[in-house]
Amino acid sequence: MLTGLNNLPWKLLLCIAAVLVALGFVHQRGYQQGFTKAETEGKAALASLQADYIRQAQQQAERDKAALVALQQRYQQRVQAANDAEREYFTTTAALRKQNENLKRKIDDVTQLWIDARGQTHPVQCVFTAGFVQQYNAAFGLAAGTGTAAITGWAGDPTTTAGTVDSWLRDSGVTQRDVLAHSIDTGERYQQLVAQINGLLDYIKALQNRKGK
Image 1 (spheres, rainbow, N blue to C red):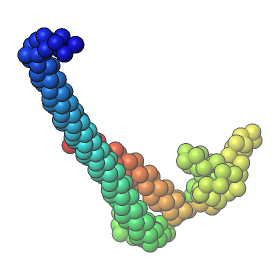
Image 2: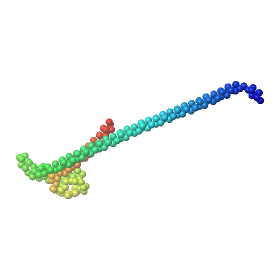
Image 3: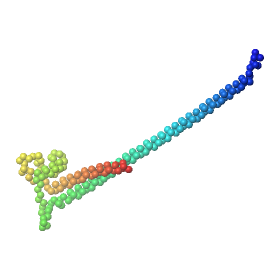
Image 4: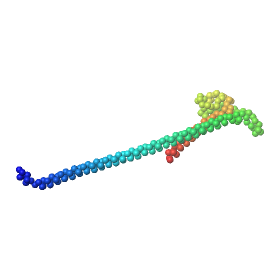
């Protein structure tokens, strides 16, 4: 048996074993290097993805912030436009109220006396018939029973026509002073409505101008 062992090609076997060991070492080292490389590349890819995510999140946050700032600015602009319109309206109505008071203080000055061509003064003798008063009130939509201020005097029914020609021509008791006072109040309300409409138009125009910027 020993003779058989001695006859084996030991050198060849040793060479083969050495080659196998070398191949195993090379394989192991290649595996280690491949694993390390793959791990490094994987970490780099993950870091890149995380960096991209963070960057996109920051960009989205900046866009959201810019949108919020723009929304706040538009809101402030609308509030400012509304405040400007409101302030202008209150200023106008205060001026109209003062004008109304000033005009009413002068009513007696222009309704009590009149002067003829010779410079002679005479008491005003002006008669407003009941029919005139009814027509006047109807023109302003101030029919009886509406609760809206109207010039008053003779308490006739504005819808009555049969046999009332004479009553329509009777003195209503309304004076120039009454008509002028009512006209002053009506004029004030009219100008207030105009101021409201103008204020609304100015508000809309201001919003359009700011939106276009």
